[in-house]
Image 1 (tube, each protein chain N blue to C red):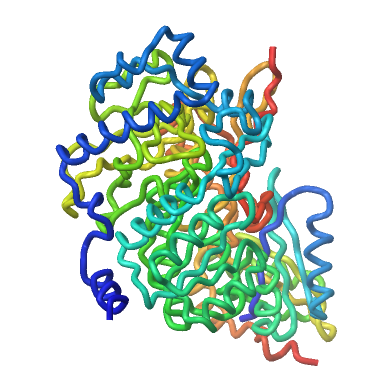
Image 2 (cartoon, each protein chain N blue to C red):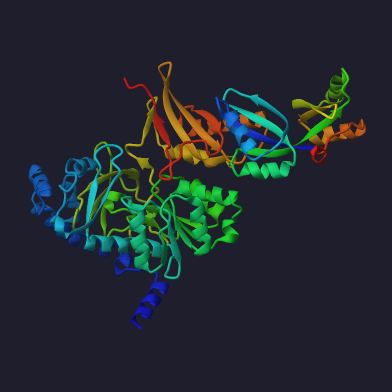
Length: 444
Length: 139
């Protein structure tokens, strides 16, 4: 009887958790209480004790939420320097799992979890999935890599927590993914955007019509920057609603921020995180609504709380209230990473600007590669972009397309790139994140 | 009219070989083909028997391609017939976008595409030119 009531509540109520329904005052009060607990907990670790000492800071100096600005930032460099367990705030025997980054750009980073951390993480992911309308009865397929990549286990436990039937298909083997989608009646799929496109291409080759031959209705996309145009294209191709997911391994993984059914900004769960947006140069808060680097403080992590962690992700807080009624602030779509920014001939360019233009062209496929190179002491940008199905066999029309793409790109990024049309599936592709930028410039 | 498959390939060593390898793997008989290129890419145009089946087979390899219809005018194998035939089109102000040829049963076949396929068909009818159809290519 109890279980049935619970399921009934889950199916009808808008909010999965009471914290999700808090108003601004309620959120602030809870944050203040949790921040105090977090600080007391952090100071049990050598790492944070030393940090506070170096900054000549005492816990008594923090008398309100705004005082968080007195606390020194933490960074990926800290995680690397203390690799693997130097930032733990509990004894190792209280931890039940760790996730580690790939370490492609240096020492890997490790995030430790207690059982309570894992439970809270699953709750956060469940809340996100519930918010976009998923319920027990849905069949949730996860095409993320499992193992160390947090998109696998993160969504797995969250989807189970919500009570859906889960299909832990894991990454790759596209034909098998399509078979699962058909045979198990998958209604919701988690995939990175470039893989969603790949799935559609293979479906086409196999004669599967996603709109008729599958029950797919919801797609969760994230982990890879993509434009609004690309989202709309994926929605149209697969006949689904696609929701943006934001997470990062340092903050557990998925479940940090998620779009609601309005599809306009990602609610970040402020009972889990204190959100700041700072200027990446001055580290001062940016004026309300302006773009800066996202800085997060975890509020309910045991094993490895992070204070004022610089995420390197650039975004802004959307002004105004969301029509959905949730008062947790909304992050705008990520504008890129502060360390992704391309500087060419003194102009700052984000790959997402280029993608937004490319996605407007129906003649093009979804993959592209930006190469920065030096030619005769000049920095140049070469953009190779895959064609979709060939739309003409007339050279003049292909050249005209090339010209129009170049013109629109120049209007957007203010430098003239060299655009090269290439055959579909010819650019390097991994089952993980698509490779988008290559820098071959001579460094002086 | 004949069905022609046009395949977009990159202008770099090995790409044509790769495409021909796929055609071989799918056991397709090439009747005629032509390639032209720009600095960066080329379009390989190919006429095969049973074009619909060939198109489906090549599609599995996710080639970047399109199938379209082209005029295939059959000419008696005598000096000067090509020039005389082309003049019929140029006199009417048509521009020939591309042209290639092959031999078929002692006749020369001119494959061509003009900037106005409808008008080209009118000229074909008016002068009663003999054109090949895809079905004619069956052995």
